[in-house]
Amino acid sequence: EDVASRQRGLESALQALALERDNARRANLIKSNFLRMMSHELKTPVAALQLQLHLLERGTDGSSATTAEGIGRMRRSIRRLMLLIETMTEWARVESGRFEPAAARVDLAELLRAAVDDARSSASSKGTTIELDVGALAPLHTDARLVSLLLQNLIGYALQLNARGPLAIRATQCGDLQQIRLRC
Image (cartoon, rainbow, N blue to C red; front, side):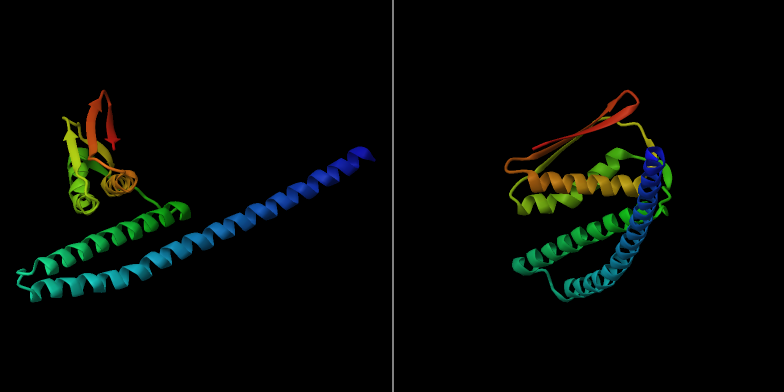
């Protein structure tokens, strides 16, 4: 009787576990669909903002420093919003199992320079600078879009956490590996 009772308890626990697993899968699917929908819905107004900003730039002669500074802030805000949307989109792809990396020959130094260039205005508005030291790096075989997204997020978070002083970024080749170090 004791063994039968324990077996029934284990079977009941196994059924409850299976039910919870199915609930977790459904919740994950709902979350992935929500992220995909939200990223799409956010891209539409951002595209409209970019168009309006472009029209505003064309309509100004650039003589006003305040106008130029305001347009620069808007551009940075739009870039940051697009980065968040792209991060959310990639996360949804990974979560839903639809992620397919597009591996190709990638120059990490070039991606790093582009990410630093994008972050310089944000650093400047915080009163800091970014120092970049890139050694000789061998080409990688990876997904450039994801590496770029990773670098932009990494540098953005480092700037957020940087209390004062420059953000120093150094990329080196270490055998078959490439190493990126950030120092605040």
